[in-house]
Amino acid sequence: MGDLETRKVGLRRAIQHANDSNTIELGGQKRTISDWLSWRREVAPGQQSFLSQMANHVRQARSQAQAKGFAVVGAGAVPASPSDLLVNINEQELSQQMETLENVLGSLDGQLSLKNATVFVEV
Image 1 (tube, rainbow, N blue to C red):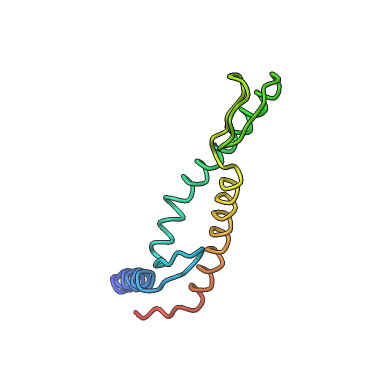
Image 2: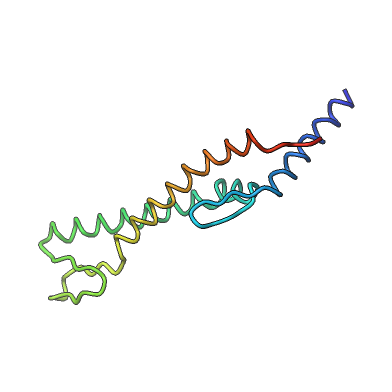
């Protein structure tokens, strides 16, 4: 039993070493597998939530303003009246950030699977 436990610890250490020493490049960012795993688990959900909430708030504000008959003007424009809604966010850039994040997450899963299948782990 002790030998199996020792082997299990050795395997985990070898996997961690492989994750720390192999890199993946996605979306112009190069990180170790360990860093990508941490990013996916701890950072990406917060980014997704933040971007999604921001887009939803802009949509809701736009809807409410239009329902009340107010004009909606984008960033850089000057409102015609004080009641007009000024959206001071580049909505196209926000949409691109959301799409880029989704693409990176989708590609990351594929790259992690590929690395998992091709990286040699020596115990």
